[in-house]
Figure 1 (tube, rainbow, N blue to C red):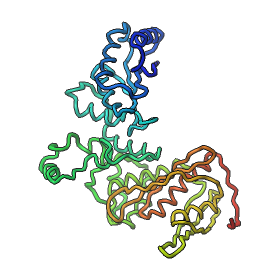
Figure 2 (figure 1 turned 45 degrees about the horizontal axis):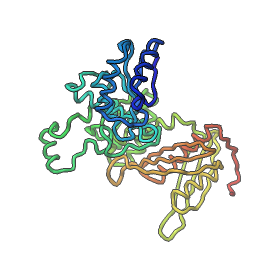
Figure 3 (figure 1 turned 180 degrees about the vertical axis):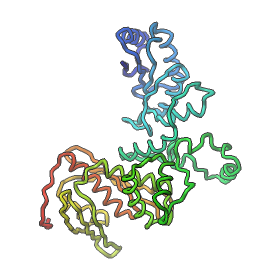
Figure 4 (figure 1 turned 90 degrees about the vertical axis):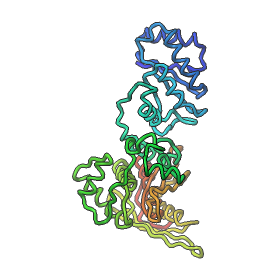
Length: 381
């Protein structure tokens, strides 16, 4: 049984001690000390944890937990300070997600404990090699990107731009790296796959990245891999992680509509025009076209002419999965209908195709949420 006294860092200490003693007597086995509005600082919070142990007579019968918010950017530091003072459970979120400025970033807390055992003297028993994939999975599901300079999991976390730093890294990595990127699951890029690679090579690399696929799953993934490899000279680990995320999106969302074909005509003196072909779950194939203010707008309007479900596009974002002119583009969108938000993601070397995939992903979520569709063979508006 866990009990959480809200806003414990601004609560009168004597009242807090009495409350904790009472709830432990009533059966609480964990008391979760919450810095609900991110008000306190590390030295203050550590002292509060220490005083709780001194002033709550039965505190030895419960685990002290902490739950820190990041309103002043102190959530991780406060959580770590609490650990040094005796807390043995920490609540937080991957990537530091949470309301307002977020909660304590679990990946940062975990790696701080792993990197400084001399300071904390505790362990988490967590497989840290799953951190990178977990971070990307959370980002993929929620639609919230990981900022490039995010500690541990950001794109720049292990990049070195300074010439002196780069030279030192080449000679001895520990000069400027306090942890091994592979220790948190960062792709190593040691094996580069291409269009001539076979199933065995793909399976081997995916297993190294932590994906263990059944034969049928491997076959489906291999088909998607070959399509990607035909468009790119080399398929990197980051490409494979994105590919696996795309496969999961397809499995998790019922395919009420499938994007069969998209074609766009656009230019600085032309009206952007898009033609799309969708196949519904009953096998019906429908093709329609539309114009728009740009190629993506034209594609979305063409899709809307077929699906005929009102919605509002509230966010559209494109991120490059890898570097280079042939990089995969990862598109994230949000659409709204009846005060409900639906996130869609799509990846492709063609940004227009990725945008179409993302929109279909969001629309299938919306349609799968009980919003009906009636097939209309008349393509007129």
